[in-house]
Length: 145
Image 1 (tube, rainbow, N blue to C red):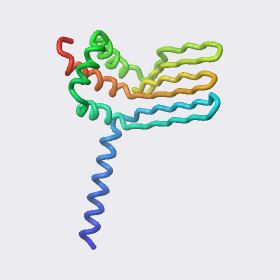
Image 2 (spheres, one colour):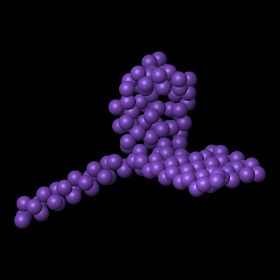
Image 3 (tube, rainbow, N blue to C red):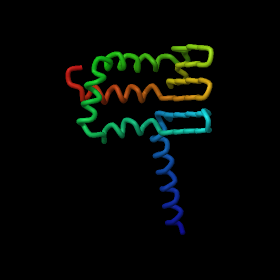
Image 4 (spheres, rainbow, N blue to C red):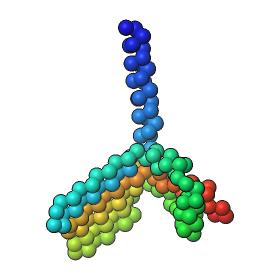
């Protein structure tokens, strides 16, 4: 019985540490609500640590192709990702039209993109650290950047 209790305690500690590691960078959230004709809802939450891990398993030729296409923007992406971490709360873009509203802001080291129109509501949040990780990985496979 004592051995079983130790095993359960060890497993519980492992799950707690693993959960802490997986969620230490935060969560990428994508929420899409459509009401054009029929109601469609997509709500997608992923731990942000999944993105850099997935980039390590992506085929190198695909990463090289992506890096080649974004090569002119990689230095800017690198600087933007560094600067975003300095702003705890800032509104970067706020555009309003008669029926549409787009807002891009930074809150608590996360980039929030909110687009609202008559039939669609789209909300995306990404930790700034994840943007930096993607820039690092693309720079590592793009020679000459």
